[in-house]
Image (tube, rainbow, N blue to C red; front, top):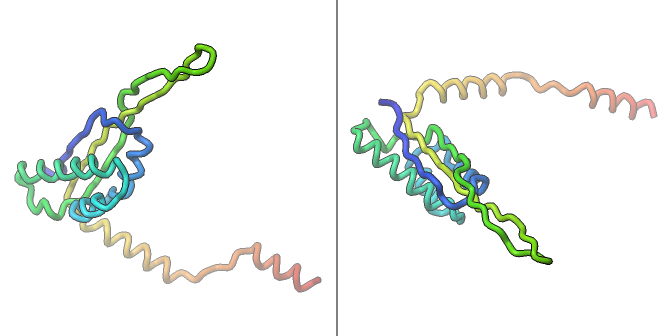
Length: 147
């Protein structure tokens, strides 16, 4: 078993606001994510922290090896049911109000060893390549020399 999931349905906050917090913890270790979520000053941080803790508890109950080393593989925030309300407006009319909800899914998995090595190799290759000046800057220098 490589991954464990936990879901939160119909949380009464818009998905756009939930995604800002979800993007901060995506790809991090569970322990680091839980600490970061404690200090984020957003309404969405508490339910996401509880959801990550729930997924970690699911991993422990399923008997996964080293649940402390798990990373947040994916965290998705989708739109849920939209509650539609009306706000009274001038001359007897009404304006619509959309109260949005969110569905959040967290998937935890073991970190992949080879993935980090590839990133290091690519970074080393980038450092070795000489930096080429752009043609635009050369043309600009030639024009300034003529004047």
